Amino acid sequence: MASPSKDKTVSLRTERAKRAGTTPPALKSGYPATRLRRNRRADWSRRLVRETALTPDDLIWPLFVIDGERARSEIESMPGVARLSIDLAVRAAEDAAVIGLPAIALFPNTEPGLRDEAASQAFNPGNLVCRAVRAIKQAVPEIGIICDVALDPYTSHGHDGLLDEDGTVDNDRTLQALITQALVQAEAGCDILAPSDMMDGRVGAIRAALEENGFTDTQILSYAAKYASAYYGPFRDAVGSGVQLRGDKKTYQMDPANGDEALREVALDISEGADMVMVKPGIAYLDIVWRVKEAFNLPTFVYQTSGEYAMLTAAAERGWLDRDRVILENLLAFKRAGADAIFTYFAPEVARRLKDEF
Ligand code: PBG
Image (cartoon, rainbow, N blue to C red; front, side, top):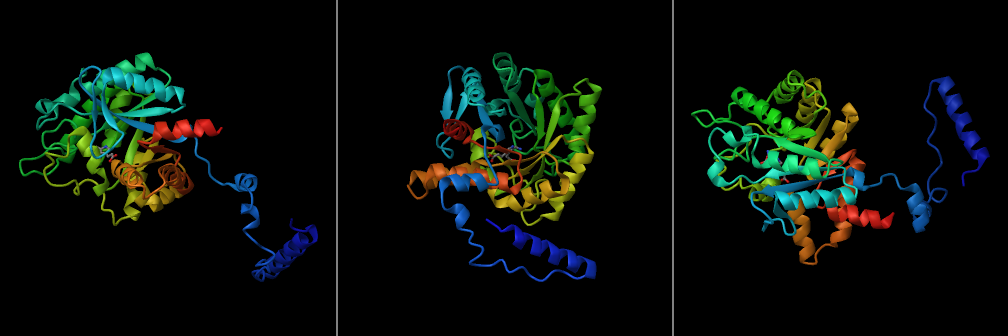
């Protein structure tokens, strides 16, 4: 325990230095007076001084949806994760609510025959994701539902936007498509629209359309700083957008070399009406999470991507990493960096584990 007289000396010295306009001399607070190991000695003490906590409230569970009934198809590059037909997705959402997860995010795997250059299925109010939203809303009204706004599950070329004749993604034509997709999903009952397409101006366009059409309470979670990353491979297997992807997404997703630009992206999306922003991927971009949270103090989410899931799972399967510990350590790191919530495929297992601990 620090002695009161010592504290007094310190503050007097600080006061005097302040009055003299100088900085106080360095405090003699080094070893052995300061032994940081003291606080770490016992479990109870470590719990007392712990700065960051992870709870089920922090976790969002991404779910992949397919057509059919009682259908479950495993994703090879994501062991333990499966695409589910709507009836099973409803069950999963019920489980999620029971274990205390606040929200799920739905990603459709559209049949290849329904994908085209114009992404027509995105505008169909009866498409897979809209049917899933309706079914889950009806069965589990207490859970939040998040839907991506991006065309990649619907385009035959796998891009998030519409292509010009020369193969470039046409920003402004894509905005019109995204507006229609967003309205269709809001109409189905989606609570949070999450534009993940990285077109310029999409948050403003979607916000204006929502207001005009009476969806004043639909939230927008912008994938504001989304990088052109190699970590999305398994996700593209899961939704089937990878096989036919023509080229890469570098003309719209961010360059992994850039940090300042992430702040510009976030600032724009906030000014256009985003309620929450996201950084993606996660573990390799903790600096971005930190900077965004520091700069804007807005609800800041992070996406622990499919590639991160695959890495951790693969190493744990081989016995090279302690699965339970390494998962918690990664999720805790997101919280420590400033994230308010985390998209993670580990959500149900971690929520169950955290619940047992309380
Ligand atoms: C679609 C989208 C992607 C992810 C979320 N929404 C992939 C991509 O942009 O190619 C990635 C999620 C993950 O890897 O877990 N725009």
